[in-house]
Each structure stands twice: as C-alpha cells, then as structure tokens.
Length: 144
Image 1 (cartoon, helix red, strand yellow):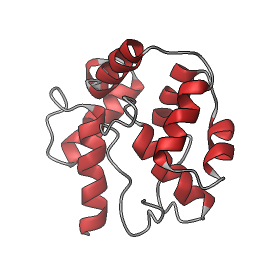
Image 2 (spheres, helix red, strand yellow; image 1 turned 135 degrees about the vertical axis):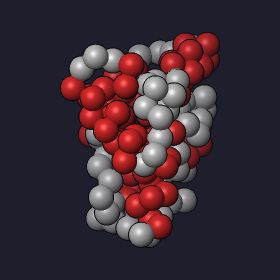
Image 3 (spheres, one colour; image 1 turned 30 degrees about the vertical axis):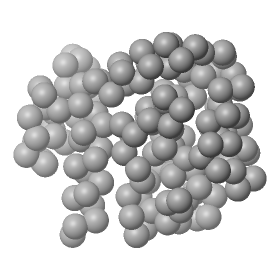
Image 4 (cartoon, helix red, strand yellow; image 1 turned 90 degrees about the vertical axis):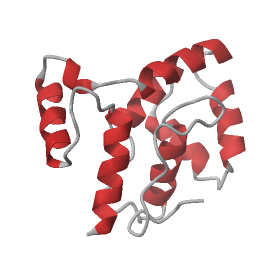
C-alpha cells in the first residue's frame, strides 16, 4: 500500500484494478491525502474526475469509503456497486480509451500545455500518452 507520496510516487494510472485504469493511482493519492502525506500530488484532480464521472460518483463519496481503511479489493467491489452500473466490457473500453489518451492531439489549451510538458522531459508529444507522461514525470520528481 502506498500512503506517503512525499517518499514515493503513486502507482501508474495505466495499472488496472478490477479492470479500471486510473483507480490504483487514485487510491494512492486519496490515501495519502487522508494522511496529509500527498506531497505535490492532488487528489480529485481532472484525471481522478475522469474515473469518477465514468462511474457517476464524486471525490467526496470515494474518499469517505477509502477513509474506512479499505483494501484495494474492497474499493473495487464498492466502485462496481456505486454510481452508474458498468459492464466489464464498458470498463475495458473506457480503460483502453483512457490509456491511449494523447492530449497533444487536441487543439486546445491543455493540448498545448501537454506538448510543452512532454518537451521538458524529452518526450515526443505526438506519441506520448497522458499516462506515460505521468509515469515519466513521477520518476523525474523523485530522482532529483
């Protein structure tokens, strides 16, 4: 269990728990926030909200459940039963889409920001997914 994000980064958003991308990272950030050890990480950020919106829940509901010292498996079970019902196929499709998300391909402010951030880490913005960038950025933050 990762609870102190001042010492280690959260798990990758690409890791799937119960088929859900983002969930492992969101759990780590939530647990560390509850303990006041989130470091520079932000729980209930836009990436987390993507999961919450997909399931029809919000960050406060999720956090209230996690605060009860639940295991990853218990959180997956709760998530499956909460909010909008999603089939395993819907979860897989949503997770696949999330894992392949490349913000630089969008012609908006976030796409421009993402391209700049990729360039700072010597990543090609056109071929780098958001989750890959997060992983590289996490590692760079702890190598300093």
